[in-house]
Amino acid sequence: MNPVALVPVYNHGATVGAVVQTLHDLALPVILIDDGSNAECAAVLDALVAASTEASEKTSLLRLPRNGGKGGAVIAGLREAHAQGYSHALQLDADGQHDAAALPAFLDAMREAPQAVIVGFPRYDASVPTGRLLGRYATHVWVWINTLSRRIRDSMCGLRIYPLDATLPVLDAMPRHSRMEFDTEILVRLDWAGVPIRNLPIAVRYPEDGVSHFRLWRDNARIGWMHARLFFGMLRRLPRLLGRHFSEQR
Image (cartoon, rainbow, N blue to C red; front, side):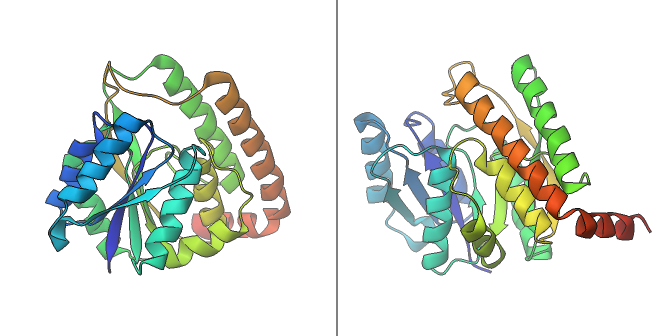
């Protein structure tokens, strides 16, 4: 196995350096995906790449010409990681929300189940906004409906490990939707494709000065349309999904 870390970045100049250092402490190479950041953040990313002189601290930069949303950045990063010959991609948000102490457990799970997607399910502290919690629960319910299962405990967590050989064919067949709905849609479609999913807990905090790019009306509308699209996709797959469901109940 030959994993790499993918960090999509959009104006996270204040936090991305610490995230990269955490990944290098685990001897992971890093691909930063600059999703059209401002000049200040772009300069921080350039400096991180220039400072990576050792193979164990390799940092490369994929700079997108314009902001296309988190999903678009992750898609570009997954394709770049596969093109560079990596076997797995650890996706981690650039804002430092996720507890770095849990990352070794994710890498251990990857080694134990190399064909599986390893997905974080958050353990929140008191900093989480109530609206975020309610919105996430609504998405959880739709995911459970659209997979006829609870194999995916949380489809919105920004920490996960993708097996690239299994992920790229699913990615190629997906509609080209590239913003906040991507994290959920790719997991549902990987589950439909029979890719195993393992869920691991991860502590998540929302810092008071954190940068969020979630746009309430626009992104909720896109997520709602995604759930509707997946629901009709589930109906087309209903006999197979029901067969899988009853097989797992035996």
